Each structure stands twice: as structure tokens, then as C-alpha cells.
Length: 134
Image (cartoon, rainbow, N blue to C red):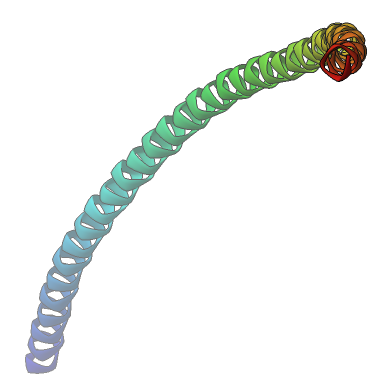
């Protein structure tokens, strides 16, 4: 009987150890569950951050499209202004050419007048000399 009693005591000890191990395992499982929940929360935070980044990228792409449209508008305006400047340059050059022609004509007429007066004055000098000689 003593042998039975010893066996029962050892079995009770084993049961006690197993119960203790079960409690430890339950605590470990709870810790793991808490860790899994923390990981799930972290994953959700990361998903939210990714969504925010995606939204930011969409906004940036829209801003880039707006900026590109503005650049194209400015480029078109610049090309238009360059075309207008070329037109004005050509028109100004035509005006200058016309003014040069008029100035050349005026100078030629003025030169003819001066030449005619010089010839007349030269003749006048010979007449004066003729009068003085007489």
C-alpha cells in the first residue's frame, strides 16, 4: 500500500507540475495573443500610412499636371511673344529702310541744291572778277 501511496503522491506531483505548466502555457499563449494584436495594430497603422502616401502621391501627380499645364501655357506665350517680336523687328527694319531712302532722297536733293548754288556762286565770282577787271 505504501507503494500505491507513493505512486499516488508522485502522480499528484506530476499533475501539480502539469497544472503549473498549463498555467505557464496559458500565460505564454496570452502573451502571444497580445503580441499578435500589437502586430495587427502595427499592420493597420502601416496600411493607413500607405493609404495616406497613395493619397499624397495622387495629389502630387495632380500638382505636377497643373504645373506642366502652366509651363506649357508659359511656353506657348513665350513662343507667341517671340513671334510678335520678330514681326515687330521686321516691321521696324522696313520703317528704318524707308526712312533711309527718304533721307537719301533729301540728301541728294540738298546736294543738288548746294551744287547748283555753288555753280551759280562760282559764276558770280567770275562776274565779280570781270567787273573788277573792267
